[in-house]
Length: 84
Image (cartoon, rainbow, N blue to C red; front, side):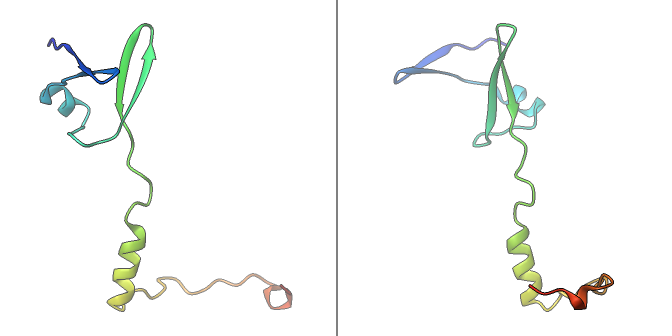
């Protein structure tokens, strides 16, 4: 597929056809990483932030009363003698 460079202020933009974005699992609005390798511009989808949404999920679980420990607390021998 071919496209053309469009002037955007002091920069340039390229319209990327939807089928090419789909091949890397990207859609409009996603973050991408651009690098240059061997004279080529390489575009990669930025990985999702690890643990994104965990804080909200834990708050929801707590509000529903479903936040009990699955395993009991594990104490180490001598923990009761520690001073902080």
